[in-house]
Every structure is written in structure tokens, then in C-alpha cells.
Length: 192
Image (cartoon, rainbow, N blue to C red; front, side):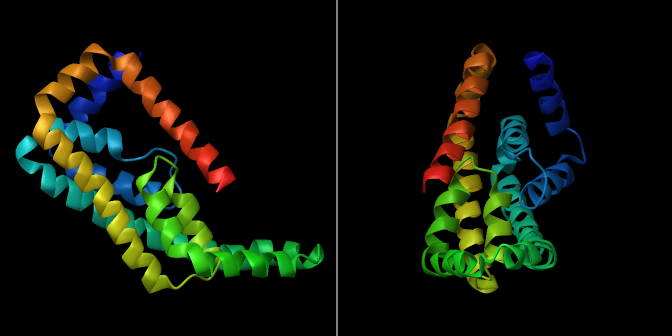
């Protein structure tokens, strides 16, 4: 099953509309979609090593734009849905404390969590809910998402053939390590 999925992702990577698919996945993942763009980005970089920088830029810009949507979701929907619940349970002080912590450590949180396998939408929605400075959020998002996607592109540009051979020979190991990274990211998120 994993082999078929891997082969399908590689086939999609060679499709003429692959760049649009990459942008759509990166945009959606930053605001509401559960699957990160990294597998498609990696496949596209492996398929066309001459375009790795273009793909990393597409991923970065689309992810930051999706992050703006996530911020808006956190800002507008949080106010409409969660604010009445906070008021009902008299937790205004606790929420003000959360906002103060995000205001103080928000840039660091965005930079750190934007590089990890933790779903970025959690950060984008939390930033909007905390009323974190939108422009600081956008700047930190551009830096952290750019670092992440350009690092993937660089590694695949340098070690593309070796990386593809490693992945193809050890597909189960690679997917297990990715899953462990995601679980580890959630554990870090819970305890930070």
C-alpha cells in the first residue's frame, strides 16, 4: 500500500499541474488541511532537481498565504464561537494570560513550530485567536516556512539520487520516522 502511494505521489510530481497542486496543498495545510506539503515537495524535487528552488518558493508563498487564512480563522471564528464560552465559564483572565504569553513569546513560537512537523495550522489559528500582530506573524511565517522548504529543497538538490534510493529501499523506515517526528512534534507542542 505504501509503495502504491509513493508511486502515485511521484506520478503526480511529474504532472503539468503539479506546481498548482503543491501550492494548493501548502496553502490548505497552513489553515485547515491535515496533510503537509512535504511529501509532494520532496517528490517534485526528486523528479525535477533543476526546479527545486522554484518548488520551495511556491511552497513558501502558498504556505504563508494559507497562514493568513488560518490567522483569520483564529481571529474571527474564535471571537464568534469561543468568546461566549470563555465568558460563560468566567475564564477571561486565563485567556488574557494566554494572549499575554503569545504576545511575549509569539515570534519564537512561530519560528520554532514552523520548522517542526507539528501542523502549522495550530500556530496560525492560535496567533489569530491571541490577536498577535498580523505583520509580525506574516514576517515570522515567511522566515520559518522559507527555511523549512528551502532546506528540504537544498538537501534534495544535493543528495537527490541518494535520497530517492534511500527512500525507495527503506520506505517503511522513512514513513515510520516521519510518523515518529509528527508524534514527537505534538508532544513538544503539549509540553511547551
